[in-house]
Length: 101
Image (tube, rainbow, N blue to C red; front, top):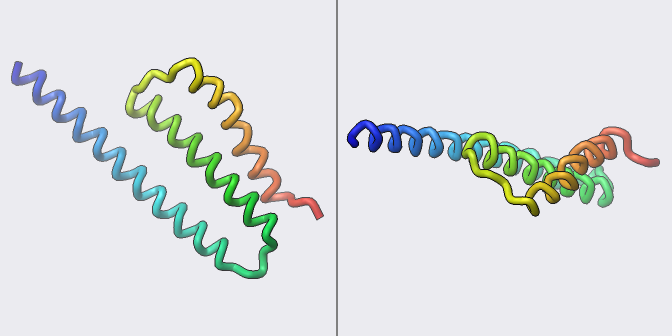
């Protein structure tokens, strides 16, 4: 019984460690986002595309975090959301790298 309780506490500690890492990554992304938005040389459309890229990448990383690291089983509606969300990261990244003139 004690071994099960200790393994539960260890699992909880590992999950908290990954949550702290995820929080640090979101802080880094937020700092990059603030620098990008504060730059007045960029047009408003590229800022909107960057914001959409940021939201899509956070949603993708969040879903991968909860399914692969936290071992949550996604429901059937979550699979449909993933099917349409994952390609958006690539589409917005391509638009940021090669914008329309």
